[in-house]
Length: 140
Image (tube, rainbow, N blue to C red; front, side, top):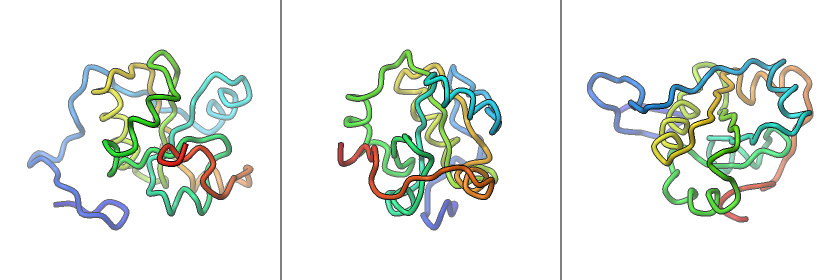
């Protein structure tokens, strides 16, 4: 067991990320802003609903990594497999984003990037944030 954002999750003995045929690329803050302004990316926040509602990158969908199977059907009804997804979580090592990106890859999403700076880098950089449910996949 491993603690991720206050939740206990089972981790394989070798503690390696999920093995998929897709290896998500890293996206840095500057590139992410360019993708957002061009409309060329779908933002996916992998944090818990309460964290998402407290603040998230404007326009992001909430798809909690630790509840992916519950939230995925509503998310999949709104996003296509050919769209570029930028997945993020709270920041630092972005373990939730890595878990979520692996799950999305297994569901057939091939265009994936991980924003390792996450919400903390975005917020601390003085960038705009939204509060509330926004595009919460569970409520849309």
